[in-house]
Image (cartoon, rainbow, N blue to C red; front, side):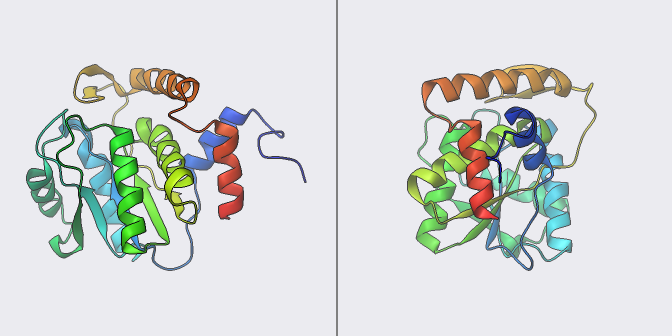
Length: 211
């Protein structure tokens, strides 16, 4: 059997597998919604409502952070989820305060530590589609470091208009969602080179072992 990534370009294979990931039969222990800026939050809310309708997750996890870095804060986020039709009883906060800055790596590490403390074996990560690859890769990186037994699955948020101008990345990056794709790829390459993100080949090996 060929190694992951030898059949096609590694970047292409990983992206497709993340955006079209399979899920285990039955419920996973939890799904985590990455903190979004307000224009993008309905993307993850819609995906979450779909997971609950399919009875695919037992708990919906969110950051407990106060409003910062483009995130409207746990209290407002929770209320927006309830208004969107997500039952309040399913929502649980993941401790991240007093984080000075809320970003993808802070979230991923906190979620993995939370899952380990709770004894969760499976978790689904949900983010806006343009951010899903980096969010998933960051979570797998954290899991490989702190809790390699954790099975992490990907479920992208519902697509929103690609030509709509929105904010992203701690609320300081602005552009159309289509423009944010390139910015995300640049961040992935940068964080891999810095050692903050596992190389794509390693994430592919993780997916092969997980399945």
